[in-house]
Image 1 (cartoon, one colour):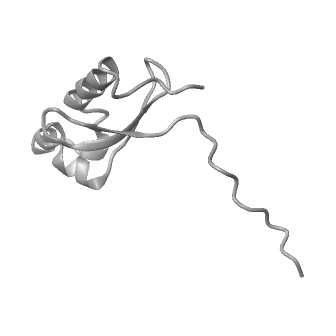
Image 2: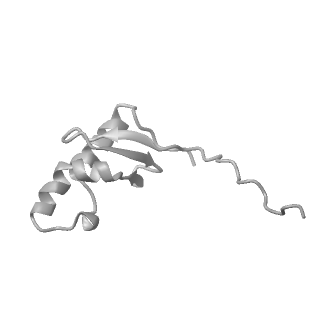
Image 3: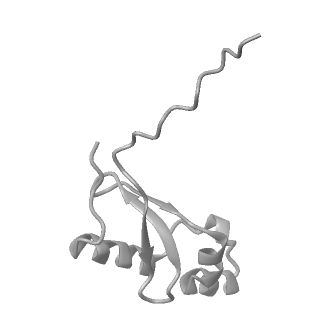
Length: 91
């Protein structure tokens, strides 16, 4: 009996994640900007453990999973956008 399953669809997204390194601690994350306001960040376990701001906040009693963002990394993303290493993804 022949399979009725179709092949997986090709990845035709117009955007890709780009590596951005935090200027403060060197944590590397995957970033894509969909608009000036919308940024998607993929954190690896290594990046979470390396993040100086997360470490400081965890020592202060917070849980890393509940920390919304790292301001140092946010500044590094803004710098990458300003100098052209990161662009806003096409729709």
